[in-house]
Image (cartoon, rainbow, N blue to C red; front, side, top):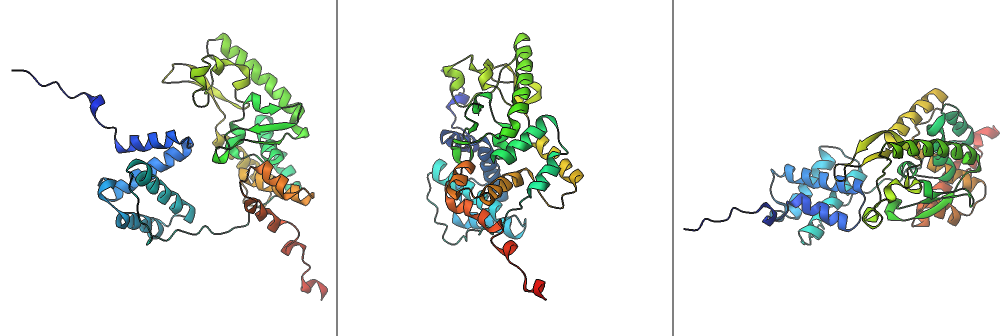
Length: 329
């Protein structure tokens, strides 16, 4: 009598969420999008008592999205992200075309961005020093997004051409933006200190950094090269589980957010601003200086000039540039 071979775990089909992760990674979505989509699909399944999505349809999707809007009171953008995650699952993992005509797409309200004056930017910068001051200067002076600034590598700074290369920005697009003259000297000094730290890490057998996509397989030692190091590295090192390498991550974005909030409070600027407000201020001040809107669009990395047009509404050409009739009394 022959015994049956025990089932090999590798013969089992991957779990649904693992299939979802693979489908997202194949399409080169960002790690943040992957985490968000997996989280929303998991919540969708739990909401329906762990039923498999293949056994559900438009009615169940409608119930979940409606619950988010009515019971959880989520924002319109959050509701749209949840629906996008579920549609991605059905379209690219389950290969089911859902007919969602009954589900109304939440409209994202059009809100004018908060913009700081140049004087207010100076007040906030006056409350910062060191790498945090440099990062805030780049957010404002180059129009960088928070993560774009945190993920800058040494090779992305071109001092000779006065430009910064933003790699794989929003929408996985590259772009070039301006390197402010005001930061060139302190940034060079900062990079000298970072290089000294990197050389000390190399001497201790570490000095590795995470590389994008398959570059580590093509160039196994590139992760220790100076040009690939973070411009703003973290103070602590970590050990990568898959390779065993001792690495430094870039400075976490939450550290800069906390520093900016504290600087805003100390400055006395009476506005509800964030790190992203500096990007809004960059665009608005360029338009105030007479720069062409297409140039501003390219510097910001907007795919559609309509997105950039919102900054024309906060210039002194609208309500701010109108003289009230009450002033003539």
